[in-house]
Length: 113
Length: 107
Image (cartoon, rainbow over all chains, first blue to last red; front, side, top):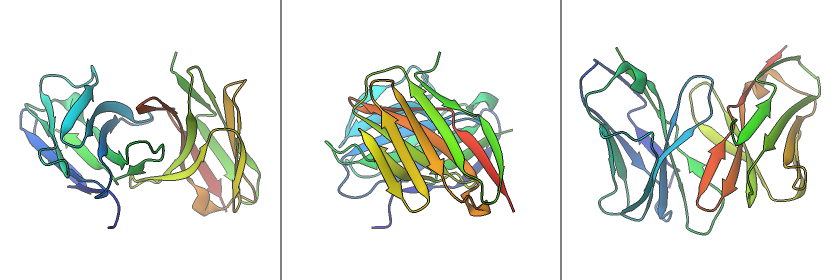
């Protein structure tokens, strides 16, 4: 296992298009988190899963955002009708329940033009 | 006011200098993390602390739980230390992040 994997690394899309990102966590990690990071800021929490259950969603996650983890393994984050304000780095992290150490992916950098 | 405040926001140093980055937080925590983020975006965990002090190579992290403050020190800094250093606090089920300190070490 090579850690948390995110795809794609970079995505450029036109305003109004839909985009989907994928995160493959470390296999034995049942907690999976999505964060958004804009320039000059620390990551902001979006949502997290325990196995396939989505347990918490931030107010930042508008109706245009949806996240799934259908089999409790990989997760997808979809943004519909993208806006320029959605341009950011989207980070995924995972950890085992009960552990306090996170493992982060390299992120997907989204640019909406 | 953010729950996690870091200072300074930006720091430029000459190679070999001793560097200190500070973090203050306002919430109860069970652990504090220092993270390193390079320009490509990936985040690496440097330390996880709940009390006292930890050392790893040229990096030292300290935490004062009563004062809700932590510091990250880099001794004999090197250009390869150039990165963004992020303080994050773990509370219940989630982490809250500081905005990061951008460190540039010049040769």
